[in-house]
Length: 143
Image (tube, one colour):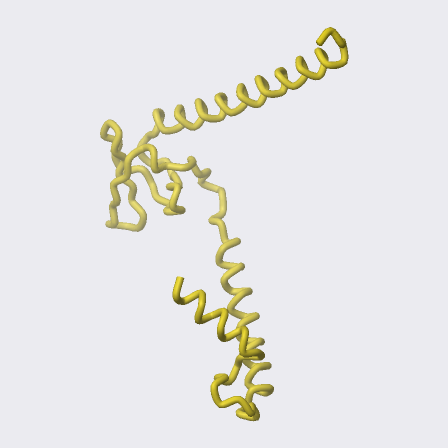
């Protein structure tokens, strides 16, 4: 217990824990202050990804206009972040969906050539390479 290396390790570890805890509290305080200082006309994003313009703030309830004439009410805790006016919308999700759809189209086109009814197994629908693949899909549907 009197070993100085052991004490140094303990002190450094506690210091790192305190530093991480301080940073997390700071982040939470910044998040809470953003919600407390909302003004009409600011563009915000909810935790669900909905983007809207603040129309009214009434205590803990915020009314957002998502499209012209469409107003939705949220509690302040549901707001994730304040968006800048020049910040582009997140198109990453759209790109991922389009990429997955394009890959699926390519697989379907390739599968149509391979599985054109030349299968000897009458229980295997066309488009599946193996029986296990179909069993996996059926098992997932039961969950």
